[in-house]
Length: 332
Image (cartoon, rainbow, N blue to C red; front, side):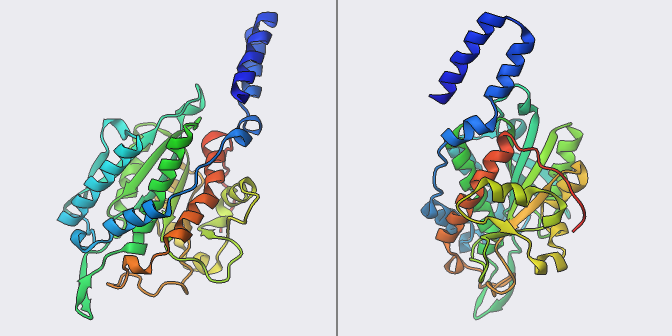
């Protein structure tokens, strides 16, 4: 209804003024987020669907999703189907973004929602997570499959949940690319490939939002997920302001000390485009004991917590894909 009133108002002014300058000014005013966002209802993330996605990706059938394995090909096909079911378009006519990783065939899975604004649709926000893991390892209690539920089926499922929400809302002025990376465990090879490809194809990437290990709640934290490289942009401040109902994010000193900003798939986009590119994570070094171990099973995952993380972050996502221009700041 608000948009209809805005359009009617525009028509009246166009008829009375008839000048391109006034029309352009009116359109700019009418499309501000202060008028639009309050009227948009963001759907709640489905904890059950998130659990379904994590459960499948972390199943023994996929054998730990090592790059170059049959298991990761099966995972890739599953993710392609999920993006298609959600209603995303393939990126550049193909969900599979192929590359080589240490002599092995590898593939990112990439979909997109085209922007709706005549100008802002030429700006791209990348939302991503890696879906690969490390495959088989030395057996622990007879189990040799490193299933990678938290690392990083959870981040992948979070991206799928965000894609479902944005598709349901059907309002994104900027183009959104959803990138699920392979070969992260081999040195961020998949994200490096896609970032370089998008740069070569002259995509105007303005922000990259990454998800890593979101399966367990932080311990005694006032915010729900920390942001790597917190001081490198105003992303944290924008996401906190966008959600008045809870504190979304903050800086985790342990993550800064470990330089996690440079160790996840956000970093290649920061290097290539010199833009705000950061990772949301809830692994705080005290709340998960199975990193790169066979014990990283779906039984360790709290899907209701994961849905709450997506719900907390979505108002900030809406700001970034529609209005807010994030800014690079100083060093961490």
